[in-house]
Image (cartoon, rainbow, N blue to C red):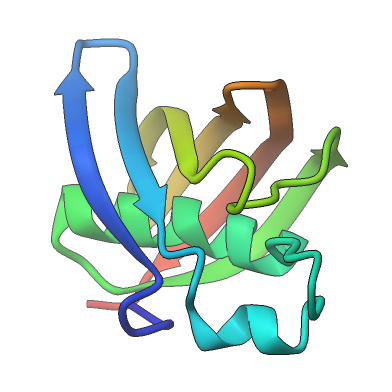
Length: 122
């Protein structure tokens, strides 16, 4: 986990086609002291990192982001208003790479849509 104590997993499910992980973001995490004081917003790059960590945890492998395509930030993720985030992932391992299509959402709707490619490091 790149940000210690940033989130905890509250629920997860896996099917042949999709992995769904529900997390609860720590609204008091120090990252929000600067992003932004009084109106916390989860940085987009952190939301992208959540998917990478989810894939690493699933495969028990370290990954490096090779490419991120179709990255669409659709709404602000404010943990003071809604700390629950659901990560829906379609994951495919092909040789030394892992492809991900992901959707992050909270109680207000879709927050992030991403397609990414990771190289397996170990």
